[in-house]
Image (cartoon, rainbow, N blue to C red):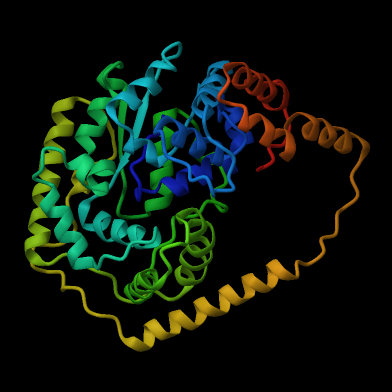
Length: 402
């Protein structure tokens, strides 16, 4: 189980896994579910994430039992990956591990130095509708560090209190089955994949990484524009709509594609604090005797205390440029929704048509929705595991992303 942490290359690793699903299966490593969204839905179920009544997404009740049931059907190695598993409570982590103890369970965590992690997490907070400025946000993180209940008080510590997170996920497995992968500073994507592959025992050279993306980052001007826009949005706009329309279109699409302007940095005192946190983490990981892949020294913030310049306010011109592109993108989205282009379908052979019919009968969109809405029942969850086994595990075929 790859449990995170967020902003440590998890999007890249997940894209690499799913983009090479057939190649990995040939090496003896399987992915339960039909796409990475099934792992996300299972994570929400495990963490008991509330679902607003207005959310058009299918309910995720029962999804963890379905995913773990699929995993236990596999003979060989299995990977479950979702970065928000790191946000689980001790009881939720125990449930996850216990549900898989019929097999040998390994826990993998990717970790990153605070000097790079903190600005990335502030950006992510803004991309998730946050309105707090960089300096205030960072002060709140530093203040919460001293609290005994910091994982409950602060989202940052909930997903980045590494020693506490690994401690609760390792309660029922030996320490050498807990793997800590450090995020490299040089060639972060390729080397991170090599390190992750070393944990799972797969050959990284045989995989195609061209389709794997790193989670988009924003410049300071783009982040500040988005933050101010968040302040102006009506309170009645639901978060699920924001995540699917604003975050995906603007943050991951338009704004991330712009040339990066300056980014927030740590002031001297903040840099010293981050360096102190790094030493605490490094010492704790060594004492815990977990399996470390990479170099723990990479968890120390780069540079010297006092060397980074403080954050500067981005020029108004840069924010205006970002705003213009954002409005244009939203206008285009509105046009595409109102006047969708007609799609031409390529002719299919008889074998492919038969396969498509079988897929539609067992796991088409309507069937899938009916089954998900009934997955609070154990019998339906078991039926979904069997359907997945018939469609995916029992034969070799292409894996559609549904």
